[in-house]
Length: 526
Image (cartoon, rainbow, N blue to C red; front, side):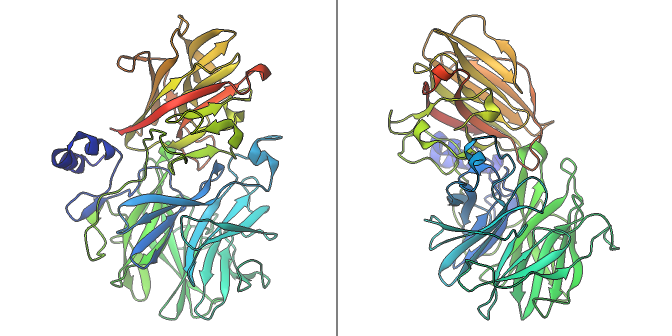
């Protein structure tokens, strides 16, 4: 984390405020920032400015609610404001009925503001290909919602929504072969057939014709010209710009960033561009940080011969002056810790697939998150797993759980979720409760003595060094014991990072509706 800023906060306003800054912040407090601007999984970023405010949207895949939206005054300090999608109703597998839809949900979100409305466009692929799925546009008068979603019969992959200054509306979409499809003015249906504008693939930074095509396109109109930015080259860290005097081309191209910096192996990739009030431009672009996720980085834009060149000399920046927005704003970060004291779920949380709203409550026992069990063989099939991002460079999540409401067959606990996953849980068999550590479906350790009390404290520590997670438990909230083995965090679900997860499921039908009460979740960055 940014140690200098943490110390300043501690000395100025005390330990409680300092603890709120335990999450990574890019703001150095001296007019500079250090990338990434959010050290967690915020993939496929797109960004706009509305007046003095910047808005950011990200891919969320099978996590619900979907299409997270963040807000900033300076492009450095961000906070969550809402989600564009409450749930997915187009397939019962989003409810985990008849299977699951991991890696589906929202992909490649695009955000725009037009005539007093916010719009978010995205696709929901079936499988990993580009041939089948849904395309949607959500609209709202404010980013907090309520949002109205329109699902199109057409499938437009990796869509970039664009409002032209003549009133026409378009979507740029495709992978390798880029297409333009015009929408009707109400943005609820397709008006015309798709028109191909690009069908060339990049082999390296000098030649065309190689295996990797462009995707994740975003369109801008600047000084009468159409500019289309998109990543290319797989993980090589290229950002390509197409430029034309007409929406349908012909387009010329230029590589505007060529940064194959490795962390651990991949360079910069997809992102979006935004203009400040003073005329400057910036670009938010994601970088692959392995099992921690695809993190957004902020880079400057320099216009050279009519092309928006990114970074410094085509490379990423690490520490750099903050964008000139005319004043200095307070340090903010997306929420993490939660006392579960409100009546609504905090914006830091997302469910794995659509939740069953009858199976959780913040009001049945005020001050607690109550999770009721549904039947599942293991965590991958369990509904109402409540998650939030792990973060780098290292982070620690802790919970205290009351298990007095568990039934026979319940498995309730806390851990780190991806494929593979690992957790510490209380497993009830008959009237006996055992503390167990599970790693990818295998019980690694069982504490010999049954749990006698009703409370357990569980902790998970995550680091980007070799992407490991370690687990601990306590019977009094003071002395913690290590348990089980190390989770080697990975990406068995491609492009979806590891997450802290609270859960309760039952391996037996008789355990349905047994409940676990979580008093709080505390996040600490290290």
